[in-house]
Length: 531
Image (tube, rainbow, N blue to C red):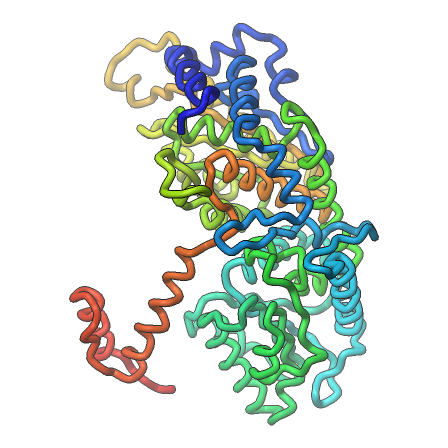
């Protein structure tokens, strides 16, 4: 990339090569207030990033040169932003409660979304109240949710994160992989008479989800005969395919092709969430995201949390060669949050195809990884403190304790703040060099940001997810790539269709490379076929 701001940032980066983050604090007693902001009740402290007033101004200039505000307006107005598939990306409309029409191709898509949400609410209330009865007249006690990728990561992560808001006796079981043991373990523990299965699949062609769905359908029909299909619910953008599978029309909840899988948690894909926490809490979840949408759309860049997160990520990746990002929540409820963000960031921006033509020459998405904070302190934090590569960190922490466990929470907060301080300062100042001290030396100068929120409510979680969604979009705009397609994923699916028949029929894989053919042949010799 060669723009005025990009070149200015290259020069600015060189001027900071011998300036430590701790030096920036030493020279500025107002650094925290200068490099932090609040939105939606979330505090974002980025003062421990290697950033200066001058550098931030140059990053804002970079966003301006990329016409980021113009792209943000295009996103929220329904213009085509997914240029390879010629589609808008309208996940923000899914959480917009206002009645203002949103016409797309002559249809008020917001009206359709609100009708779909009302249908979802009616379904949720019927199941939670016990009004929805199984084929034999029994109340439903268990829900199996089948899906993979966004159809699973979103609902599964949110249900775990908001388990404290569970207001039902229903048990929800998530199955994504086609590891037979996982599905068998769930089915062996359940009664088909009192079980519903939600099949989440945008296309209703995803092989992993369909294979699991076929197995569950057969399991239901073994006890209930043809009435077993009444225990199936479909969530899809292709309702005809769901009907062909055997799901009755009244049990099909539609979402739309302009909603990417990794942005679908706000749609009918969120049915398991609504069943777990109730419809009002689900609406609060949507409301948190909507408020972050408004902030991203309207706030000036210097006060815009997603934009600042995006720019600091670009600063670290493209100018300081930091190619991974650790997401470290100090909350067991957010255990799956790094996994969720892996898909959101790496599937959205893990690309090099340029928006106009050819390929970009700069790095794009970082590798996203992480885990629960205190656990990580006794594992991977060692590499973050003393490893040879610099890994920026996003710390996430609630300020309020779970009632009755204030002592644990105080230690939790102390642990989080201690790690960010230690990563920034290290302990190398004034220590004489010798083999023992060198082994103990932590050089510091590791950048991190900290996100503090009151507690993990549905509103706050919705805000956090939308915050990262908009960060990803802003980075894609500045990098000049399309954040809304996933052709690499599609390529893998195509090969599944070609390889699966060889494994099923034991035919020789004559048109494969020698490695794939050899692995297929080895599997054919050693598989046990009991189905």
